[in-house]
Amino acid sequence: MTTEQCGQDQLPIGLFDSGVGGLTVLDAMRRLMPGEDYLFLGDTARVPYGAKSQKTIVRYSLQAAAKLIGQRIKLLVIACNTATAAALPALRETWPDMPIIGVIEPGSRAACEASPSGDIAVIRSGAYAEAILRRRPEAQVRSLACPLFVPLAEEGWFDGPIAEGVVSRYLEPLFEKSPAPDCLVLGCTHYPMLAAAIRKVVGPEVHIVDSAATTAEVVKRRLADKGLAHPQAGRTGRIRFFITDDPQRFTRTGSLFLNMTITDSDVRLVDLENVPLPDAAETPTQRKSS
Ligand code: DGL
Image (cartoon, rainbow, N blue to C red; front, side):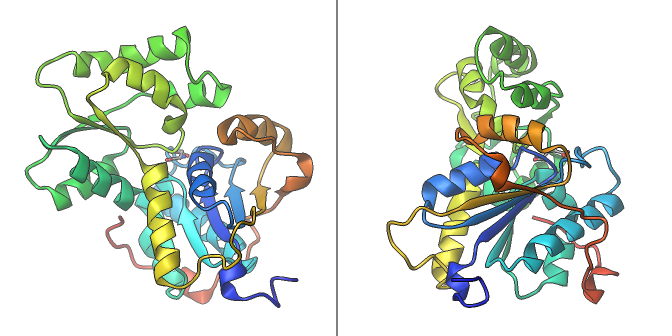
């Protein structure tokens, strides 16, 4: 059956990220909803988004979303913290009928619920601090920069002495003090790969909030509410990948992130620069993101 013939509930879920990090969100989603089909776009030619201006991140995100929506998808996940923070309102304004879910709101809600003390550490993303303080104005949010975490994860060094050494160098100063935060938010989609090393350093009591898992739960609920969950029970969905640069590096690192073999035939090189955007995308207004 072609996507033209099938019902909306049988369409794939689209996800995009600046690179491979969003595969942790895809991994959480495929574990929770194995019967769904997924189309993942990694803008590997233009990663990282974090170093770009907001205007550029919005343009890149509109192009990525337009590419996925042009393929027919039933729901879009922005599997990237940077793109969620910069572009979620613009995407919702451009495609008001498409359910669009970012990673920051699910992650910050989970952090607010998980932290009895309200003393919450966030690695990397300022947008989490805003979202947490909107929900819990009395919270104390401590932001940490851990710039070596992304290259470590991309290298596949998820645990062992090197990963643990780097993680403890960044996190120990905060977590060995008393009182220490009781919750740690992983504010980048690469970081769940380092969760075991992080757990070793922060100890068993600290709640580690991984927006991949919480976003997957939000997506599952949204599909159920909208009657869009795949109707065929027991099936195993198909996963396809669009990328904008060298497939070889993506298949290697992506296979590590997903813990499954990505083959060349699953991956297609696409061009985002020339994707036609809807008229509404030309002047999206800037609103608060979540
Ligand atoms: N995975 C992206 C995120 O969660 C990576 C960061 C970037 O491209 O700046 O923000």
